Image (tube, rainbow, N blue to C red; front, side, top):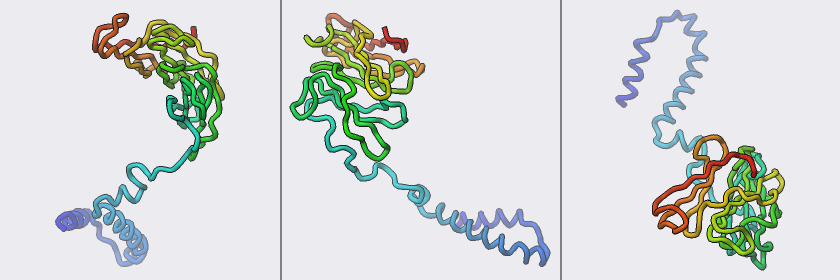
Length: 230
């Protein structure tokens, strides 16, 4: 009530005298202003109403967007692979799954904004078993690319510490190309992120406990992206 009294007093001090004719002409406007003001006052007076009136808060109830995407043993990721501003679902089969695709395949289910389309194979040779898979835009074209850190190495892939990139063409991933030959070894944590704000994701390695062939414990190494495939 104290707020209301001060509010009224503030208006009272700024009010201008009007004639009876002006009063008659202004009545409809005054009535409308009173109605709008009353609604605004109600929103301000009821705690939480202003936020609730504009939409729900937190996460809405979960709904199924896909019934067959990223099975057991596969590596699941998200990224906008076709540059439409919507994050898509990506599954790296890695070692393969009887119910999924062959080893080293990458499947993409494009987002429509309300569901994921059926999964389509975008690559048949990226990120094998034991490798670390990632999705990030390394060349700054607005489309997320597929990345594989071999880490300890794989007989069917590259030597230890190699990073392979399969650039996104917007409808599939191109051939995997080696972008680094000494980055993120076995036992280290691999990551991707634009560390210098040039819109190209860089490769990051956290040594954690350390590796005889890498850096000392607790070190972080960054390989900046040039955006150009070797």
